[in-house]
Image (cartoon, rainbow, N blue to C red; front, side, top):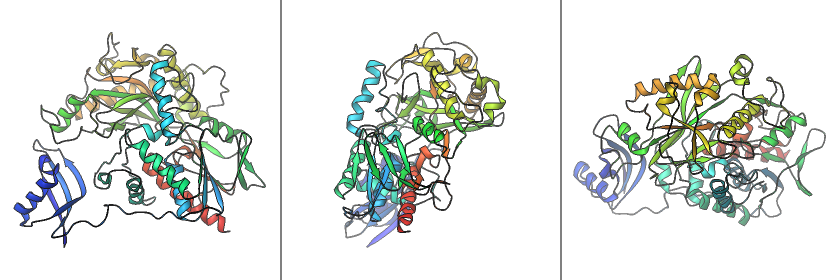
Length: 530
């Protein structure tokens, strides 16, 4: 027999199955043989912290399943094939869904396998050089592979989020992600999960090609017939899931007259605090998280002069990493391992930037031009992307043309002062003190300054010189949207081309990209029937 209960317990009770069993015995009078946690969330609004649990109690029996729903993946050798460009979450989930639907996926990825890619990423801190085909953005797993693996999404109306989480569990993720209010996988766990997903694709008869870069989309009378990668031709309708940093793809689409448009983004900095300080603030106690609580999270949002200022991609107990995808760029991002046990916590702190702002605010256009770039006008579909490039180039120049990141203490920035020294940081290529309020666009810095003041009022102790701002955070989302039909998800003009995921402008994280990948696969399978 099984029963489900909603219970509210202390953290030390929630941390142990035996303690939960004892709680159920004492509070509910039920003696159970096993317990499965179905939902878990922390309530830290008061000084006494509780954990809210929804549990399934097993009486005189044990669970008979693995705690997740398995998906059946048939063999698709010899079946009609489709091409998936990009092996990030959008591409991987598209390929797996195609297999479910009886279509053979051919996945092409410009970067390396997830384990080979890790070696190139490690070299960035040692050599200050970025491999333009193997970095934090390009390679198996996409930008999400080395950015904490956060699985929280608000896009639950677009598709089956639970299905995405269950597929992750089927490929090695902990079933905790099915219960946690803000689930995450951890940068240390993701490579093995991604590799298992790739192995499923291959074992079912699909193909995965690394270091294979799409150079052209093959079109015949407004119908996509496949792609060309060097001398290789891959035939079939195409799911284009190239990620938010594939700027050469955007330029190619623009040059070919394939309909795209500039998209609003958000830019700013990474803000890093000691994790102990964030724990103390969020848990309202001097000892911080203690033994039984996870590293504390936060989420802030405010409005300043008609634009949102907000935290983004918060990494408790995490590290700041160099996320450039090519030369003459300096970009930062955050990640955490599964235990989230770093001495630091960080998040993006960003300001909304609308396409029309590029024409209306002079400070946005005063950044130095990127050498040898072919800039378009401020109303071009590539205008927002080119702004990203100029801001990243300015940060690279401030960092002495290396991956040494420009940085400034938080309170100094708010008060318009320089920082003569900087606190210790998780950012391994190193920091260099610069007055970020001076060289970054005033459109961004003035709103960040006021936003930080607002956050400091909301959360006492948050606005402090113990925190350091690290520049710049620009890759919050794609700067371009590839236009597609709302119903069929095909490109508005090219039949058989399915723009997908973050890079196409239709997702904002691992789970939403996975959901969009599945939807594109379903529409492609319908297209192939006609």
